[in-house]
Image (cartoon, rainbow, N blue to C red; front, side):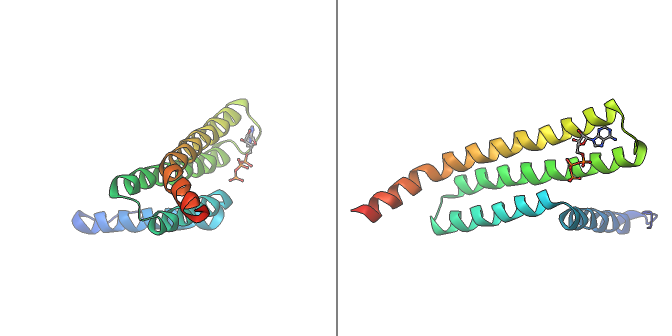
Length: 131
Ligand SMILES: Nc1ncnc2c1ncn2[C@@H]1O[C@H](COP(=O)(O)OP(=O)(O)OP(=O)(O)O)[C@@H](O)[C@H]1O
């Protein structure tokens, strides 16, 4: 484990590397990160298949980024709680449950966004298929 002791532009690139390492490590250790990422890939492939306009892509990217960023913060909060309060404590429970609640909220937003974005293209595709 190393601290970022570099200066100037080197410090910036070191911070970037630490951040990338944080994302990779959350991806390896958290099942939820893998599940959310798989959904994101499926949704982006579907967006390409349906030739969605750029504004719809942006909505999907916003929802995906929100879910993944919140999942990363949840992982950070879980690790911090495990470090400072490995024993059972009501405040530790509040912190973990609240962080998990934030992920749930963004996931609900992502589902609503998916329905909003794909509803018309999917209905059109099904009616074209039927006729
Ligand atoms: N130190 C603690 N004190 C009190 N309750 C805790 C504590 N640690 C965990 N809990 C309770 O157990 C739940 C599950 O915690 P856990 O650390 O296993 O995370 P998780 O939600 O299963 O996520 P992950 O599996 O990704 O680590 C928390 O949401 C909380 O309600």
